Length: 90
Image (cartoon, rainbow, N blue to C red; front, side, top):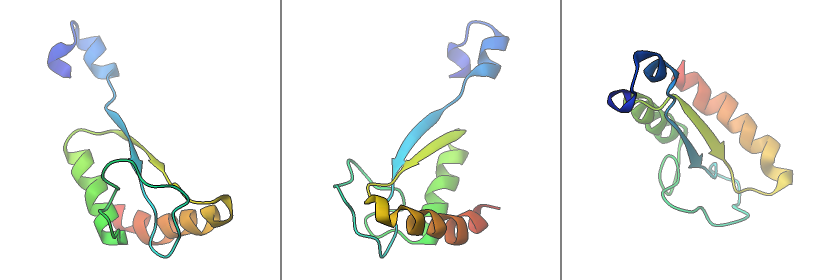
């Protein structure tokens, strides 16, 4: 992407971003995940963290995690990410 920028100032403003889909373990999916889910078909905290690290090493700077779970499971899903995945990224 930096090579495509016409001036250095443009290169510094470029952001590589993606959307990733994740259904945390133990939480039923409300809809099928399109494409490859973050952390694989049976994600663990370790596999999700490893996938995020791999994306960062490839140059990704922003990732939005979409969770196809019902609203009543969203808090539990967010708690799992906060308590199990995030500490592995610190």
